Image (cartoon, rainbow, N blue to C red):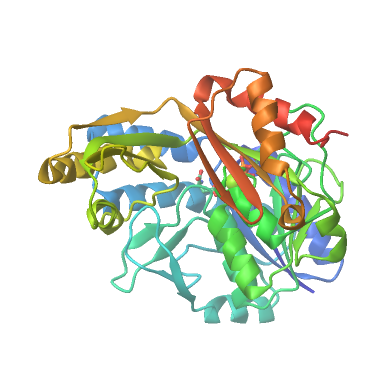
Length: 404
Ligand code: ADP
Ligand code: ASP
Ligand code: MG
Protein backbone atom coordinates (compact mmCIF):
# COMPACT_ATOMS: atom_id res chain seq x y z
CA UNK A 1 0.00 0.00 0.00
CA UNK A 2 0.96 3.64 -0.39
CA UNK A 3 0.23 5.43 2.88
CA UNK A 4 0.45 9.15 3.63
CA UNK A 5 1.09 9.79 7.32
CA UNK A 6 0.72 13.28 8.73
CA UNK A 7 2.15 14.15 12.14
CA UNK A 8 0.84 17.28 13.87
CA UNK A 9 2.69 19.74 16.09
CA UNK A 10 2.49 17.82 19.37
CA UNK A 11 3.58 14.64 17.58
CA UNK A 12 6.85 16.32 16.53
CA UNK A 13 7.12 18.70 19.50
CA UNK A 14 10.74 17.83 20.36
CA UNK A 15 13.64 15.58 19.35
CA UNK A 16 12.32 12.68 21.39
CA UNK A 17 8.97 12.90 19.63
CA UNK A 18 10.59 13.17 16.20
CA UNK A 19 12.56 10.00 16.95
CA UNK A 20 9.32 8.29 18.01
CA UNK A 21 7.68 9.38 14.74
CA UNK A 22 10.64 7.97 12.79
CA UNK A 23 10.17 4.64 14.62
CA UNK A 24 6.49 4.58 13.69
CA UNK A 25 7.24 5.34 10.05
CA UNK A 26 9.97 2.71 10.10
CA UNK A 27 7.50 0.12 11.39
CA UNK A 28 5.06 0.95 8.57
CA UNK A 29 7.83 0.62 5.97
CA UNK A 30 8.93 -2.72 7.43
CA UNK A 31 5.35 -3.95 7.06
CA UNK A 32 5.92 -3.55 3.32
CA UNK A 33 4.28 -0.16 2.64
CA UNK A 34 5.54 2.86 0.79
CA UNK A 35 5.22 5.96 2.97
CA UNK A 36 4.99 9.70 2.43
CA UNK A 37 5.36 11.56 5.72
CA UNK A 38 3.94 15.07 6.14
CA UNK A 39 5.00 17.01 9.21
CA UNK A 40 3.79 20.13 11.01
CA UNK A 41 6.07 22.55 12.76
CA UNK A 42 6.93 21.73 16.38
CA UNK A 43 3.99 22.58 18.69
CA UNK A 44 3.80 26.32 19.33
CA UNK A 45 6.41 27.15 16.68
CA UNK A 46 4.01 28.79 14.19
CA UNK A 47 2.54 30.98 16.96
CA UNK A 48 6.08 31.92 17.99
CA UNK A 49 6.96 32.95 14.44
CA UNK A 50 3.81 35.07 14.16
CA UNK A 51 4.72 36.72 17.45
CA UNK A 52 8.25 37.45 16.17
CA UNK A 53 6.84 39.07 13.05
CA UNK A 54 4.70 41.39 15.19
CA UNK A 55 7.76 42.39 17.17
CA UNK A 56 9.29 43.93 14.06
CA UNK A 57 6.13 45.10 12.30
CA UNK A 58 2.57 45.65 13.57
CA UNK A 59 1.02 44.63 10.24
CA UNK A 60 3.57 42.39 8.50
CA UNK A 61 3.48 42.04 4.71
CA UNK A 62 1.80 38.70 4.06
CA UNK A 63 4.27 37.52 1.44
CA UNK A 64 7.14 37.80 3.93
CA UNK A 65 4.99 36.38 6.72
CA UNK A 66 4.44 33.25 4.62
CA UNK A 67 8.15 32.88 3.97
CA UNK A 68 8.74 33.11 7.72
CA UNK A 69 5.93 30.70 8.68
CA UNK A 70 7.01 28.06 6.17
CA UNK A 71 10.30 27.69 8.02
CA UNK A 72 8.75 25.87 11.00
CA UNK A 73 7.72 22.89 8.88
CA UNK A 74 11.07 22.81 7.07
CA UNK A 75 12.86 22.26 10.37
CA UNK A 76 10.75 19.22 11.31
CA UNK A 77 10.82 17.77 7.77
CA UNK A 78 14.62 17.87 7.64
CA UNK A 79 14.98 16.47 11.18
CA UNK A 80 12.46 13.68 10.51
CA UNK A 81 14.30 12.63 7.34
CA UNK A 82 17.57 12.63 9.31
CA UNK A 83 16.03 10.54 12.09
CA UNK A 84 14.86 8.02 9.46
CA UNK A 85 18.36 7.93 8.00
CA UNK A 86 19.72 7.18 11.46
CA UNK A 87 17.38 4.16 11.57
CA UNK A 88 18.92 2.89 8.34
CA UNK A 89 16.22 4.07 5.90
CA UNK A 90 16.65 6.01 2.71
CA UNK A 91 14.66 9.21 3.31
CA UNK A 92 14.49 12.53 1.52
CA UNK A 93 12.92 15.77 2.79
CA UNK A 94 11.03 18.14 0.47
CA UNK A 95 9.76 21.67 0.96
CA UNK A 96 6.34 22.51 -0.48
CA UNK A 97 8.05 23.78 -3.58
CA UNK A 98 10.16 20.64 -4.04
CA UNK A 99 6.98 18.59 -3.59
CA UNK A 100 5.46 20.62 -6.45
CA UNK A 101 2.54 22.04 -4.45
CA UNK A 102 1.29 24.89 -6.64
CA UNK A 103 -1.15 27.33 -5.01
CA UNK A 104 -2.92 30.58 -5.77
CA UNK A 105 -1.35 33.78 -4.43
CA UNK A 106 -3.67 34.44 -1.46
CA UNK A 107 -0.97 34.62 1.19
CA UNK A 108 -1.61 32.97 4.59
CA UNK A 109 -4.64 31.09 3.22
CA UNK A 110 -3.63 29.91 -0.22
CA UNK A 111 -5.56 27.23 -2.10
CA UNK A 112 -3.80 24.31 -3.73
CA UNK A 113 -4.27 24.41 -7.51
CA UNK A 114 -2.31 21.32 -8.43
CA UNK A 115 0.52 19.07 -7.32
CA UNK A 116 3.39 18.27 -9.67
CA UNK A 117 4.60 15.22 -7.79
CA UNK A 118 7.08 13.88 -10.36
CA UNK A 119 10.06 14.16 -8.07
CA UNK A 120 8.28 12.49 -5.16
CA UNK A 121 7.04 9.68 -7.39
CA UNK A 122 10.57 9.05 -8.62
CA UNK A 123 11.94 9.07 -5.07
CA UNK A 124 9.26 6.59 -3.94
CA UNK A 125 10.10 4.32 -6.90
CA UNK A 126 13.74 4.44 -5.90
CA UNK A 127 12.82 3.23 -2.43
CA UNK A 128 12.99 6.49 -0.52
CA UNK A 129 10.65 7.55 2.25
CA UNK A 130 9.47 11.00 1.21
CA UNK A 131 9.15 13.53 4.03
CA UNK A 132 7.25 16.70 3.16
CA UNK A 133 7.14 20.01 5.01
CA UNK A 134 3.40 20.58 5.53
CA UNK A 135 1.34 23.79 5.42
CA UNK A 136 3.12 25.36 2.41
CA UNK A 137 3.19 25.69 -1.32
CA UNK A 138 4.46 27.94 -4.05
CA UNK A 139 2.72 30.28 -6.49
CA UNK A 140 3.24 30.30 -10.26
CA UNK A 141 5.53 33.30 -9.59
CA UNK A 142 7.52 31.14 -7.16
CA UNK A 143 6.49 32.96 -4.00
CA UNK A 144 6.13 30.81 -0.89
CA UNK A 145 2.56 30.54 0.42
CA UNK A 146 0.96 28.89 3.45
CA UNK A 147 -2.36 27.06 3.48
CA UNK A 148 -4.11 28.51 6.56
CA UNK A 149 -3.80 27.38 10.18
CA UNK A 150 -3.83 23.62 10.51
CA UNK A 151 -2.88 23.45 6.83
CA UNK A 152 -0.59 20.44 7.13
CA UNK A 153 -3.74 18.30 7.17
CA UNK A 154 -4.50 19.66 3.72
CA UNK A 155 -0.96 18.99 2.51
CA UNK A 156 -1.38 15.35 3.54
CA UNK A 157 -4.82 14.82 2.02
CA UNK A 158 -3.91 16.62 -1.21
CA UNK A 159 -0.76 14.53 -1.62
CA UNK A 160 -2.78 11.37 -0.90
CA UNK A 161 -5.22 12.40 -3.65
CA UNK A 162 -2.46 13.34 -6.12
CA UNK A 163 -0.55 10.09 -5.59
CA UNK A 164 -3.73 8.02 -5.42
CA UNK A 165 -2.63 6.72 -2.00
CA UNK A 166 -4.53 3.89 -0.36
CA UNK A 167 -4.81 5.68 2.98
CA UNK A 168 -4.15 9.02 4.62
CA UNK A 169 -3.41 8.79 8.34
CA UNK A 170 -3.61 11.96 10.43
CA UNK A 171 -1.63 11.46 13.63
CA UNK A 172 -2.45 13.82 16.47
CA UNK A 173 -2.64 14.08 20.28
CA UNK A 174 -6.11 12.51 20.73
CA UNK A 175 -7.33 9.03 19.78
CA UNK A 176 -9.56 10.17 16.91
CA UNK A 177 -12.66 12.24 16.29
CA UNK A 178 -14.82 12.49 19.41
CA UNK A 179 -18.44 13.48 20.04
CA UNK A 180 -17.03 16.79 21.37
CA UNK A 181 -13.58 18.16 22.13
CA UNK A 182 -12.27 15.59 24.66
CA UNK A 183 -10.31 18.37 26.34
CA UNK A 184 -13.61 20.03 27.30
CA UNK A 185 -16.01 17.13 27.74
CA UNK A 186 -14.43 14.42 29.86
CA UNK A 187 -16.89 11.70 28.84
CA UNK A 188 -16.76 12.50 25.11
CA UNK A 189 -16.87 9.29 23.07
CA UNK A 190 -14.50 8.38 20.25
CA UNK A 191 -16.33 7.66 16.99
CA UNK A 192 -15.22 4.59 15.01
CA UNK A 193 -16.26 6.25 11.80
CA UNK A 194 -17.83 9.47 10.61
CA UNK A 195 -19.10 10.65 7.21
CA UNK A 196 -17.17 13.23 5.19
CA UNK A 197 -20.19 15.53 5.40
CA UNK A 198 -20.46 15.43 9.18
CA UNK A 199 -16.70 15.82 9.54
CA UNK A 200 -16.78 18.78 7.18
CA UNK A 201 -19.45 20.46 9.31
CA UNK A 202 -17.65 19.68 12.59
CA UNK A 203 -14.37 21.02 11.19
CA UNK A 204 -15.85 24.17 9.77
CA UNK A 205 -17.76 24.73 13.01
CA UNK A 206 -14.57 24.70 15.02
CA UNK A 207 -13.45 21.11 15.76
CA UNK A 208 -9.83 21.73 14.86
CA UNK A 209 -8.92 18.03 14.85
CA UNK A 210 -9.03 18.28 11.03
CA UNK A 211 -8.61 21.42 8.98
CA UNK A 212 -11.82 22.20 7.05
CA UNK A 213 -10.29 22.34 3.61
CA UNK A 214 -8.56 19.01 4.12
CA UNK A 215 -11.97 17.40 4.67
CA UNK A 216 -13.38 19.14 1.58
CA UNK A 217 -10.49 17.73 -0.40
CA UNK A 218 -10.87 14.23 1.05
CA UNK A 219 -14.58 14.24 0.21
CA UNK A 220 -14.05 15.52 -3.32
CA UNK A 221 -11.37 12.96 -4.17
CA UNK A 222 -12.69 10.16 -1.96
CA UNK A 223 -9.52 9.86 0.09
CA UNK A 224 -9.98 7.48 3.05
CA UNK A 225 -8.72 9.37 6.11
CA UNK A 226 -7.99 7.89 9.51
CA UNK A 227 -7.48 10.20 12.50
CA UNK A 228 -5.50 8.56 15.30
CA UNK A 229 -3.01 9.20 18.07
CA UNK A 230 0.75 9.13 17.58
CA UNK A 231 1.08 8.41 21.32
CA UNK A 232 -0.53 4.94 21.32
CA UNK A 233 -1.69 2.15 18.97
CA UNK A 234 -5.46 2.61 19.33
CA UNK A 235 -7.34 2.28 16.03
CA UNK A 236 -8.65 5.84 15.50
CA UNK A 237 -11.60 7.19 13.50
CA UNK A 238 -12.26 6.47 9.82
CA UNK A 239 -13.62 9.42 7.84
CA UNK A 240 -15.52 7.97 4.91
CA UNK A 241 -18.70 7.98 2.80
CA UNK A 242 -22.02 8.05 4.62
CA UNK A 243 -23.66 4.68 5.23
CA UNK A 244 -26.97 3.42 6.63
CA UNK A 245 -25.78 3.06 10.26
CA UNK A 246 -24.78 6.70 10.41
CA UNK A 247 -28.32 7.92 9.70
CA UNK A 248 -29.67 6.23 12.81
CA UNK A 249 -27.86 8.67 15.05
CA UNK A 250 -29.58 12.07 15.17
CA UNK A 251 -26.68 14.09 16.55
CA UNK A 252 -23.13 12.80 16.06
CA UNK A 253 -21.15 15.59 17.59
CA UNK A 254 -20.93 19.03 19.17
CA UNK A 255 -18.50 21.68 17.94
CA UNK A 256 -17.58 25.07 19.28
CA UNK A 257 -15.73 28.01 17.82
CA UNK A 258 -14.34 30.97 19.73
CA UNK A 259 -12.47 32.38 16.77
CA UNK A 260 -15.30 34.48 15.42
CA UNK A 261 -16.18 38.11 15.89
CA UNK A 262 -19.58 39.73 15.42
CA UNK A 263 -19.98 42.97 13.52
CA UNK A 264 -23.25 44.90 13.67
CA UNK A 265 -24.10 47.72 11.31
CA UNK A 266 -26.78 49.90 12.86
CA UNK A 267 -29.86 51.33 11.19
CA UNK A 268 -29.05 50.67 7.56
CA UNK A 269 -31.67 51.89 5.08
CA UNK A 270 -34.02 49.03 4.20
CA UNK A 271 -33.84 48.82 0.41
CA UNK A 272 -32.64 46.39 -2.25
CA UNK A 273 -28.89 46.16 -2.90
CA UNK A 274 -27.64 47.08 0.58
CA UNK A 275 -26.57 43.58 1.65
CA UNK A 276 -25.10 42.99 -1.81
CA UNK A 277 -22.93 46.09 -1.54
CA UNK A 278 -21.68 45.33 1.97
CA UNK A 279 -20.92 41.66 1.46
CA UNK A 280 -19.37 42.20 -1.97
CA UNK A 281 -16.85 44.61 -0.41
CA UNK A 282 -16.04 42.07 2.31
CA UNK A 283 -15.74 39.17 -0.13
CA UNK A 284 -13.41 41.25 -2.32
CA UNK A 285 -11.04 41.39 0.66
CA UNK A 286 -11.01 37.55 0.79
CA UNK A 287 -12.87 37.53 4.10
CA UNK A 288 -15.30 34.69 4.67
CA UNK A 289 -18.55 35.74 6.31
CA UNK A 290 -20.29 33.08 8.35
CA UNK A 291 -23.59 33.91 10.08
CA UNK A 292 -25.71 36.79 8.87
CA UNK A 293 -28.75 38.15 10.70
CA UNK A 294 -30.92 40.87 9.25
CA UNK A 295 -34.30 41.85 10.55
CA UNK A 296 -37.06 43.36 8.49
CA UNK A 297 -37.46 46.88 9.78
CA UNK A 298 -40.70 47.59 11.57
CA UNK A 299 -41.07 51.07 10.06
CA UNK A 300 -39.86 50.15 6.57
CA UNK A 301 -36.91 52.54 6.91
CA UNK A 302 -33.91 51.20 8.77
CA UNK A 303 -32.70 47.87 10.06
CA UNK A 304 -29.63 46.36 11.79
CA UNK A 305 -27.44 43.78 10.07
CA UNK A 306 -25.17 41.52 12.13
CA UNK A 307 -22.66 39.06 10.75
CA UNK A 308 -19.67 37.07 11.92
CA UNK A 309 -16.16 36.82 10.47
CA UNK A 310 -12.98 35.05 11.67
CA UNK A 311 -11.36 37.04 14.52
CA UNK A 312 -8.16 37.35 12.50
CA UNK A 313 -10.09 39.25 9.83
CA UNK A 314 -12.16 41.37 12.24
CA UNK A 315 -10.00 44.49 12.00
CA UNK A 316 -10.03 44.50 8.22
CA UNK A 317 -13.76 43.68 8.09
CA UNK A 318 -14.46 46.57 10.49
CA UNK A 319 -12.58 49.02 8.28
CA UNK A 320 -14.55 47.91 5.23
CA UNK A 321 -17.87 47.91 7.06
CA UNK A 322 -17.28 51.41 8.45
CA UNK A 323 -16.55 52.70 4.98
CA UNK A 324 -19.64 51.08 3.47
CA UNK A 325 -21.69 52.20 6.47
CA UNK A 326 -20.79 55.85 5.81
CA UNK A 327 -21.64 55.52 2.13
CA UNK A 328 -25.01 54.02 3.02
CA UNK A 329 -25.80 56.54 5.73
CA UNK A 330 -26.04 53.92 8.48
CA UNK A 331 -25.92 54.98 12.12
CA UNK A 332 -22.72 53.18 13.15
CA UNK A 333 -20.81 49.94 13.41
CA UNK A 334 -20.20 47.75 16.48
CA UNK A 335 -17.66 44.98 17.07
CA UNK A 336 -18.09 42.16 19.61
CA UNK A 337 -15.23 39.68 19.97
CA UNK A 338 -16.59 37.99 23.11
CA UNK A 339 -18.84 35.60 21.25
CA UNK A 340 -18.77 31.89 20.48
CA UNK A 341 -20.64 29.55 18.23
CA UNK A 342 -21.84 26.18 19.49
CA UNK A 343 -23.20 23.67 17.01
CA UNK A 344 -24.76 20.25 16.84
CA UNK A 345 -24.06 18.09 13.79
CA UNK A 346 -25.58 14.87 12.48
CA UNK A 347 -26.84 13.38 9.21
CA UNK A 348 -29.77 11.94 11.18
CA UNK A 349 -31.21 15.46 11.50
CA UNK A 350 -32.44 15.19 7.92
CA UNK A 351 -35.13 12.76 9.01
CA UNK A 352 -35.82 13.86 12.59
CA UNK A 353 -37.89 16.79 13.76
CA UNK A 354 -37.72 18.72 17.02
CA UNK A 355 -33.94 18.70 17.20
CA UNK A 356 -33.65 22.49 17.15
CA UNK A 357 -36.23 22.88 19.91
CA UNK A 358 -34.32 20.37 22.03
CA UNK A 359 -31.12 22.34 21.52
CA UNK A 360 -32.69 25.71 22.42
CA UNK A 361 -34.38 24.21 25.48
CA UNK A 362 -31.12 22.77 26.79
CA UNK A 363 -29.39 26.14 26.45
CA UNK A 364 -32.33 28.04 27.95
CA UNK A 365 -32.44 25.73 30.97
CA UNK A 366 -28.94 26.93 31.84
CA UNK A 367 -29.70 30.60 31.20
CA UNK A 368 -27.65 30.78 28.01
CA UNK A 369 -29.00 33.43 25.66
CA UNK A 370 -28.93 32.87 21.90
CA UNK A 371 -27.85 35.87 19.75
CA UNK A 372 -28.22 34.26 16.35
CA UNK A 373 -29.11 30.90 14.86
CA UNK A 374 -28.16 29.27 11.61
CA UNK A 375 -29.13 25.88 10.28
CA UNK A 376 -28.40 23.56 7.40
CA UNK A 377 -29.72 20.10 6.65
CA UNK A 378 -27.28 18.45 9.06
CA UNK A 379 -26.36 21.14 11.59
CA UNK A 380 -27.75 23.81 13.91
CA UNK A 381 -25.52 26.59 15.24
CA UNK A 382 -26.18 29.13 17.97
CA UNK A 383 -24.19 32.25 18.65
CA UNK A 384 -23.73 32.84 22.38
CA UNK A 385 -21.68 34.84 24.88
CA UNK A 386 -18.13 33.42 24.84
CA UNK A 387 -18.07 32.97 28.61
CA UNK A 388 -20.68 30.19 28.35
CA UNK A 389 -18.87 28.17 25.66
CA UNK A 390 -17.66 25.22 27.74
CA UNK A 391 -20.92 25.06 29.67
CA UNK A 392 -22.94 25.06 26.45
CA UNK A 393 -20.85 22.27 24.92
CA UNK A 394 -21.28 20.09 28.02
CA UNK A 395 -24.98 20.83 28.32
CA UNK A 396 -25.63 19.90 24.68
CA UNK A 397 -23.44 16.80 24.90
CA UNK A 398 -25.58 15.70 27.84
CA UNK A 399 -28.91 16.70 26.25
CA UNK A 400 -28.28 14.53 23.19
CA UNK A 401 -26.92 11.62 25.23
CA UNK A 402 -23.56 11.56 23.50
CA UNK A 403 -21.42 10.51 26.47
CA UNK A 404 -19.84 7.12 27.01
P1 ADP B 1 -2.33 18.66 15.49
O1 ADP B 1 -1.32 19.56 16.07
O2 ADP B 1 -1.97 17.21 15.61
O3 ADP B 1 -2.76 19.04 14.11
P2 ADP B 1 -4.68 19.93 16.59
O4 ADP B 1 -4.43 20.61 17.88
O5 ADP B 1 -4.76 20.73 15.36
O6 ADP B 1 -3.59 18.77 16.45
O7 ADP B 1 -6.03 19.06 16.70
C1 ADP B 1 -6.22 18.16 17.76
C2 ADP B 1 -7.08 18.79 18.84
O8 ADP B 1 -8.39 19.00 18.32
C3 ADP B 1 -7.30 17.95 20.06
O9 ADP B 1 -6.27 18.08 20.99
C4 ADP B 1 -8.64 18.44 20.59
O10 ADP B 1 -8.49 19.34 21.68
C5 ADP B 1 -9.23 19.23 19.42
N1 ADP B 1 -10.62 18.81 19.10
C6 ADP B 1 -11.67 19.65 18.97
N2 ADP B 1 -12.79 19.00 18.70
C7 ADP B 1 -12.46 17.68 18.65
C8 ADP B 1 -13.21 16.48 18.40
N3 ADP B 1 -14.53 16.51 18.14
N4 ADP B 1 -12.55 15.31 18.42
C9 ADP B 1 -11.22 15.26 18.67
N5 ADP B 1 -10.46 16.35 18.92
C10 ADP B 1 -11.07 17.56 18.90
N1 ASP C 1 2.04 24.75 11.76
C1 ASP C 1 0.80 25.18 11.16
C2 ASP C 1 -0.14 25.68 12.22
O1 ASP C 1 0.20 25.69 13.40
C3 ASP C 1 0.17 24.14 10.29
C4 ASP C 1 -0.22 22.85 10.98
O2 ASP C 1 0.20 22.58 12.10
O3 ASP C 1 -0.96 22.09 10.37
O4 ASP C 1 -1.21 26.12 11.91
MG1 MG D 1 -4.09 20.51 13.38
